[in-house]
Image (cartoon, rainbow, N blue to C red; front, top):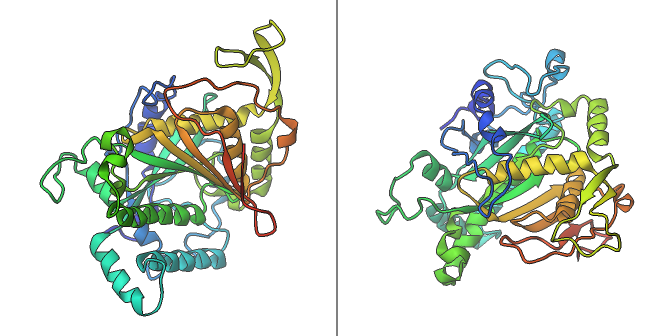
Length: 392
């Protein structure tokens, strides 16, 4: 079991030394994603169970302001000492509240969402069939213009065991899980930035819930119902990729709001770009193959880097990618829908921000059949007084 400190230690030197593996993955997509695949066996995994343990994680230790020298560092990622702890919360109260909610939700999931006399029996059943621990690791990626970002992966213990012990047999004495692909959910952060303990809390719950709910469904389903001839077994759960869209490796977003607003402004800036028509585009009234349109170019470049990073992971099913965003993260959700990225089959926004969307042109392309699925709709959840609905 990792120590509480270990669960937030980042092996920066290793990640920077091997970052080229992700950089080289920014190539044209084929049917299975990027040509350059990255194995997760070499990553520095840490236990999120230890992070959420209120008995060993001091809320003050993950919410203390960063040294000014790190906040103002011009390098990305900055040169950091071994044992550096990023700032994961704005203050001690916020950290404590998230830890309490996290532990309560894990307990509720373990009880099957029930309370009372049946809770104990449900907990025993889930504990026996779902010995779940979750693990996280830093997965940096680079935008086409050289800007670096601090992605973070979260996976369940069963998948972690498979990654770290390739070739090991399962309970039936076979290696049937070897080589299987798993779906991934890309999670986009709020204005608090990627180094927000809320992100890891939600990613952890999503990984756990996908296993617990899917294990129950498996009892009443036919294994032949799965796509790809059974390549994906839902008992493996899924991967959650916490995307970074402001290039924050240390948690500076908590304390330097001016820097955040500048990064946000640059990311969402709308500017003109030359659009080249392709065979997939609808027929234009103009015979000119090139036309100018207004787009959020930096946002699109950032999202392309995120998708390339996800598709570069060797165990990811590149045809089963979903994305969800909170608050500021709603902008990437709508933009991914506009981009019509191959393999993205689900888009969800929770109380998302969509300022400036009315200044962008409606997508003009007429989609033709493609080898990989694309998402034509986004589920937008905007609160109690505004209905939850699906928009194209």
